[in-house]
Image (cartoon, rainbow, N blue to C red; front, top):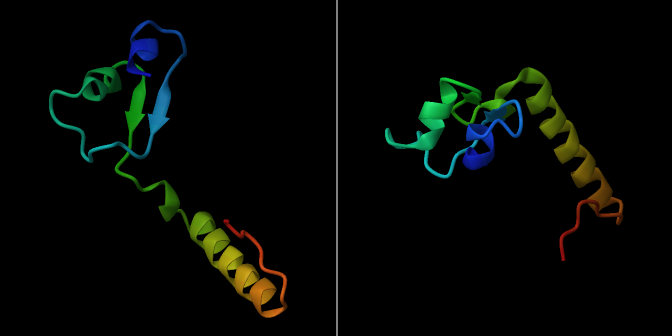
Length: 75
Protein backbone atom coordinates (compact mmCIF):
# COMPACT_ATOMS: atom_id res chain seq x y z
CA UNK A 1 0.00 0.00 0.00
CA UNK A 2 2.81 2.40 0.81
CA UNK A 3 4.30 1.82 -2.64
CA UNK A 4 0.96 2.61 -4.29
CA UNK A 5 0.49 5.75 -2.19
CA UNK A 6 4.00 6.96 -2.94
CA UNK A 7 3.37 6.46 -6.67
CA UNK A 8 0.02 8.27 -6.45
CA UNK A 9 -1.82 5.19 -7.72
CA UNK A 10 -4.69 6.24 -5.47
CA UNK A 11 -5.46 9.55 -3.85
CA UNK A 12 -4.98 8.63 -0.23
CA UNK A 13 -5.83 6.36 2.66
CA UNK A 14 -7.40 6.67 6.08
CA UNK A 15 -5.85 4.07 8.39
CA UNK A 16 -7.35 3.36 11.81
CA UNK A 17 -5.41 0.18 12.66
CA UNK A 18 -1.71 -0.36 12.18
CA UNK A 19 0.38 -3.46 12.84
CA UNK A 20 2.26 -1.53 15.54
CA UNK A 21 0.52 1.39 17.24
CA UNK A 22 1.78 3.98 17.10
CA UNK A 23 3.95 3.20 14.08
CA UNK A 24 7.69 3.52 14.73
CA UNK A 25 9.20 6.92 13.98
CA UNK A 26 10.92 5.54 10.87
CA UNK A 27 7.68 4.14 9.44
CA UNK A 28 6.85 5.13 5.87
CA UNK A 29 3.33 5.87 7.10
CA UNK A 30 4.51 8.96 8.99
CA UNK A 31 6.14 10.34 5.85
CA UNK A 32 3.00 9.59 3.84
CA UNK A 33 0.85 11.20 6.54
CA UNK A 34 2.31 14.52 5.45
CA UNK A 35 1.11 13.84 1.92
CA UNK A 36 -1.94 11.60 1.53
CA UNK A 37 -2.48 9.39 4.59
CA UNK A 38 -4.63 10.04 7.64
CA UNK A 39 -3.58 7.98 10.67
CA UNK A 40 -5.88 7.60 13.66
CA UNK A 41 -5.11 5.70 16.87
CA UNK A 42 -7.60 2.81 16.46
CA UNK A 43 -10.60 4.90 17.48
CA UNK A 44 -12.97 4.37 14.56
CA UNK A 45 -15.29 2.29 16.78
CA UNK A 46 -15.71 5.06 19.36
CA UNK A 47 -18.48 7.01 17.63
CA UNK A 48 -21.78 6.84 19.49
CA UNK A 49 -23.53 5.36 16.44
CA UNK A 50 -20.94 2.60 16.14
CA UNK A 51 -21.21 1.63 19.79
CA UNK A 52 -25.02 1.61 19.55
CA UNK A 53 -24.85 -0.68 16.51
CA UNK A 54 -22.57 -3.07 18.43
CA UNK A 55 -25.02 -3.13 21.34
CA UNK A 56 -27.99 -3.70 19.00
CA UNK A 57 -26.16 -6.52 17.19
CA UNK A 58 -25.27 -8.18 20.50
CA UNK A 59 -28.88 -8.05 21.69
CA UNK A 60 -30.09 -9.48 18.37
CA UNK A 61 -27.52 -12.29 18.51
CA UNK A 62 -28.59 -13.25 22.04
CA UNK A 63 -32.28 -13.15 21.09
CA UNK A 64 -31.67 -15.33 18.03
CA UNK A 65 -29.61 -17.82 20.04
CA UNK A 66 -32.30 -18.11 22.74
CA UNK A 67 -34.93 -18.62 20.02
CA UNK A 68 -32.89 -21.50 18.54
CA UNK A 69 -31.87 -19.48 15.46
CA UNK A 70 -28.25 -18.51 16.10
CA UNK A 71 -26.89 -15.81 13.82
CA UNK A 72 -23.32 -14.89 12.94
CA UNK A 73 -22.23 -18.51 13.40
CA UNK A 74 -18.62 -19.25 12.53
CA UNK A 75 -17.74 -22.87 11.82
